[in-house]
Length: 302
Length: 301
Image 1 (cartoon, rainbow over the protein chains, first blue to last red):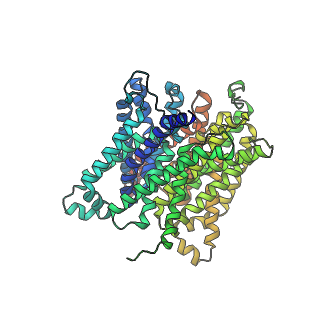
Image 2 (cartoon, one colour):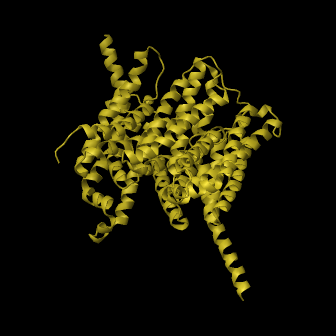
Image 3 (cartoon, rainbow over the protein chains, first blue to last red):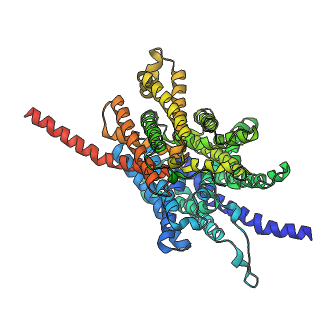
């Protein structure tokens, strides 16, 4: 009886969180490989902050937590932030990091202001949740006589869709995106249409981040965009190899982090719930330098 | 249950408000001038990392303080903790970038995820702490000058004044380092020491800004006034002075707005003021340039 209960609680609590985590990892981590190759790893951080006002505005305008309104608002804010930062950089000739930093903190401040002053705080969208994620609140809660899928948390569907879109886009545009990352000028000569491809890529990145943002929070978004790619980079032989490796290593480490967050308190005999998104981000970040050190010990004939 | 977050029982223009306003203004001056160096050394995103990285130190200091039976709300203890972890991040990120060949962007992202991840784990421990004092920590995320006490303002002011004095005394050496590291070392300056001074100044700004601007938004007060001053132009010393003035104005606007309107976090108000200052500086610079050109042509004719 107790084992059946344990299984049920695992199914209801841990499984949705883990599936959400892995979907977010696929959606952000695959595209994150190209961001890392383009030396734009911090774009993930910027977009994760900048989408907040769009998300809140979508909620405030429609008055419901409708996926489409919030998603459209957030994606608009994400793309607008990148365009605005690029425009400011071109007109002022400041370093890219500075204009990006000003634009995304400005937008984030608008989002926090809207959240604190408007009624959006009554919903579970509060500023802390935005930073630290809400993996703990994803429950599988089927109604008594409904179909099995009615109990699946809403965020899971969004995340699964984002992961599929990211995967399809990568499979379709693998060569073009690699060429754009390594050699933009020859990409133009070969007729890849780099500007349009770049826009498509940024739109995809924004969409993935928006989808993941609500469930995993902005801390973990930064972690899953950059860390898996950086963990895989020292061991990879090709772009495809790097993406595959980053997904495999990233999922193992992320699941490890989740287990650590949920089981460490019981080992120490306290009832404190640790923030799992933060723990996963921490474990992923620690794995990056470790992976670089491990490279020295793994002797591979070239 | 909540921390003494009741600013509205205090008269609006009481002694406390004036102390807090002075503290905010000094912080604004410090953030603007230090930001000029951060911008010149192209370390804007490192400043973002350092700001976020103060969180684990603050949370740990709170927990350690409670463990030893001190008050977890002692401002010096929290500032010390935040300072140590921000310094650790500001030092380790360039090290990761060069020694581990992650590149500046990769190292920034990794350090941000790591430090802020640890911060949120420790923060969740703090939040489940039985003591009622943890309410004071929540406002360090987005800043709340309205809930500051006089002792908070004094701690902030002391740190900011020491940092500002250091900056002014070493201004010439530090600006040489920011622009031409090779020349600085050829001229016999100790570049390693100066680099540490700049790191410490950055950390001091982050720590001083934690309570007013919050760890997530303090970076904006560092880079936006400095960027606006840079756009307006002039010599480096003049840029730093302009940046300090813009910083003071933004800090005061933020502090007053959060005092006057309920629920407005100071950090958000300051950040919005600073962002507006940056975007206004672009047309302002154009107007300045045009009027200067007109004066020159009038003189020539």
